[in-house]
Length: 255
Image (tube, rainbow, N blue to C red; front, side):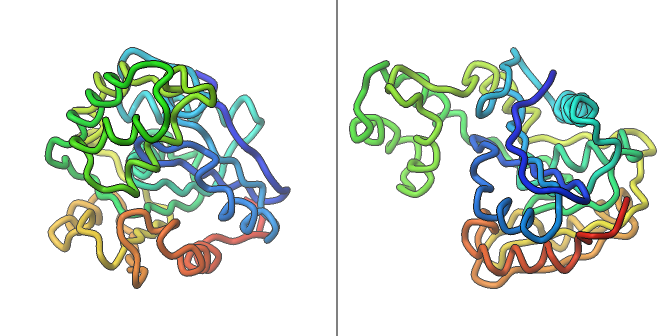
């Protein structure tokens, strides 16, 4: 599967992978800043998201393979990779199954861990929104399943501009939810390269008890917490998150 992408800049390649219900354009300001610093920054829409192809059901091996195929299509043999949440798990799987493609790895607010079931009611509510529904009414229809207005606003960015439905592959996302929330490490896999796990101060996605498993898979892992941030670290504290990336990821150095 060749993934849709937004590409900016020239230089050392850096790949950005978004979270569940996200898309490449969510990284707009961050991507522009990093590209201005001398990097070729490619933000991918993951399967069933943004303008990328839809699939009946996907797991992290599928996502990682799609990233490899998409890198090959762009002539990128090796890159630094940053992934947030679902994209962070996809990035981890990429590093564990195709380490030759990954130079440095940044994982934003997620761990190699199976999280409790969530989002099923929200996906059902999204699927129940009739085509042509005005934005305010669609928001009201989603509210019982997702009380957070900010999360609903984020979800509603996935509607088609003419309000005729959703751009994303809801059927595939719904079928893939156990795999998206879950995690299964490839047998005997390890990534020996530099890895940075970035947590939001107010998030609980990366817990102290996750660190032994993280270090088993990524023995060179380092950890940093961004103050004032929740789960969406890059959106909650854009300056702090960008500074962390710029400090960890080289720009002018060749791969």
